[in-house]
Length: 125
Image 1 (cartoon, rainbow, N blue to C red):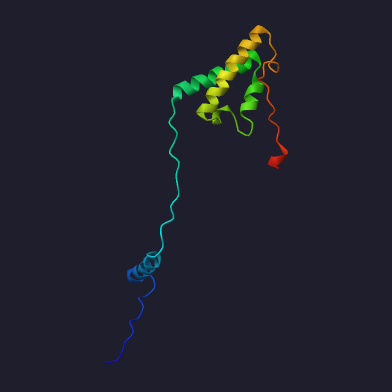
Image 2: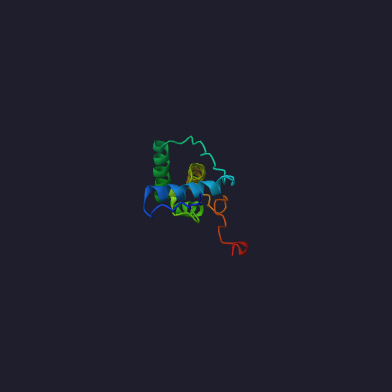
C-alpha cells in the first residue's frame, strides 16, 4: 500500500475552520494563562441621593461664600467636582463647611490654612 497523504480541506469549509482551531488550541496547551489582579471596588457609604445633596451644598457654599478657590484646589487635575471620588468629595464638603465658619468669623482663608500650593513640581516634568 502506498502512503497517501490526505488533502487539506477546501478553504472556507467547516472542516478547514475546525482544523485551524484545533491547531491553535494545540499550540496553547503548553502555555499558562496570563493572570492579572483586578481590584475589588471599594465599598461606599454614600448613596446617589447623599452625593447629589453634597454637590448642591458645595455649589451653594461656593456661590454664597466665594469659596471657589477651595473647589479649584480639590479638583486640580480633575475635570470637576462631579468627577471626584466619594472620599475626596466628603473631604471637600467638610473643608468648605469649616471655611464657611471662618468667613463668618472674619478669618481669612489663607490664615486659616485652607489655601494650599497646588503648583506642578519639577519632579513631575
